[in-house]
Length: 152
Length: 152
Length: 89
Length: 89
Image (tube, each protein chain N blue to C red):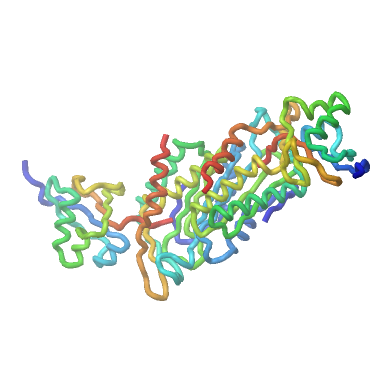
């Protein structure tokens, strides 16, 4: 399940839906990304997030399918917000439930790492110095590459 | 923050407390363990969890402190239930917030893996065949050992 | 064989490129066998701002919402999107 | 130097061991220099069930709520806990 939306999301609601996915689910891992007060600039007041409607959903659904081939994934949910966000706002949620905790952690982290380098979102930092399109970080590319090297 | 309790916990409340830990927090990773319908036995109807009061809290506080030395950890919360639990019940929650997503994932998984092999809890499976104290699994020991090998 | 000179593709721009070019979408006529690289070279002649498309900064391309490469051939009615490396999450 | 024959330790049992021995706590007199292994050997003489403490299945020990080893020496008023390998989470 992939949802791209402007409005905020409720972690409790997402968790409830994951938990309802069956009695064999022993493990639920979640990740939430929030707007930080520093980035490329040091006095970030917010973000503007743009995306490519349609392609974004397809790419993330592909990542969830890939995770399902590599690990035990009973259910996965991804929500990503777009538009203007304020400091401390929730940006992204990834939740995975699995029969095994190692699989839940791995699939959740894989989807999050791969999303950062392959899903068509672009982030503009808003600050008192002006606005600034964020550049892709080497560390994000390297983080995503790690999953290729550890591929089965 | 380590809490051992009989009563259930509310993920939304735990997440809210982690999120309130400051504007520099960009990443929150959580793990929740649930009672599964299979284990050493195949028709598990519930669990009884025993612990060593006092030592349990000290051990887990030590794991949180160790995580804080190895990764950026802004706040960490661990809740573990004891007593009799039914199928699908929540057993354990580990939540970590960090400035960086890799650190949030690593610290959360480390605490969870290390808890399973070092915190004094014992799990008895309840089933229609009878009750059964669960034996420690090699896979859990190996999972915990991995963190030693990757030590800085 | 007659070249289909009426064939067009839709070109979309996102994020920094969209702002820099001052446009989010346009329709471009293509010749048969046109590649992504050919399209970029043609677009770059539209004016100074457009040279950004063939400059030093990386430009990613998707065709019909799937990632593509400079050598990929275009087909009539394709949706071609150009954008900077992604930065979500 | 006079041996302090009145020295005792509290011994606690958890989980399978607690059930198997039918007791969760007892007080045991110790001699100076007594180790964890000495204490286990003494306890194992209390009856058939107690031989479990020195049998094939692993028995973990904590002294004053910190993990310890068979060779660790006991001090008066220590809290010694014996239990199976842990299985929480």
